[in-house]
Length: 241
Ligand SMILES: C[S@@+](CC[C@H](N)C(=O)[O-])C[C@H]1O[C@@H](n2cnc3c(N)ncnc32)[C@H](O)[C@@H]1O
Image (cartoon, rainbow, N blue to C red; front, top):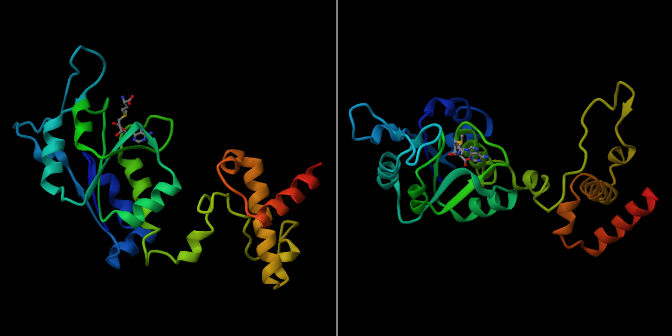
């Protein structure tokens, strides 16, 4: 996969590009990421990327020309262009999954200041938000989205390790433990030491269901439970009463 990110602040990406799974995925050629400073595409000698809003008001608005020229220099037929915006669709795991499996070239435009000239939206395929809050710029959001996608690309991490992640199956993940067995009086559940794979699977599934019911009941409303899950859920409800 190729990811091109348009940003006025390329330095913000240094740690992201050079660390952990993202660095490994780049080194292995699973993903190539390039940051483009659209200030380089301005026509005026002061490299001005923004201007005051028509009609008056606070702050500065990013102008169309530098962003659109930069976009047109890198856009291919297969490119999908995402505009980072708090007004966009909220990014979710299922979107990361579908983007990882269907997109070969992703372009992400990061805004800053008061936002964009409205006409920039006409050049984008998708507007994405990372949550209902307003950030200074789109850079953090573009890293969030890229990270969520890159870890799902084949070869980044093993499939088994993200298949049980929270949201992958529409549930939150079960509790995990590692050594020591006893930490300040808190014990690892016996079942995890039993070596009985089927019982461990059932315990984990039940924990996932109970945790999702308690913390994110909205996820259960959108999910069809299997017969086995219905049986475990009935046990959870009975234990609660
Ligand atoms: C200060 S914000 C502008 C917000 C704009 N005035 C509005 O109310 O919609 C500057 C830029 O940060 C990015 N941004 C801010 N919050 C975001 C969020 N929750 N998700 C995605 N991008 C965000 C967008 O690229 C946005 O253009």
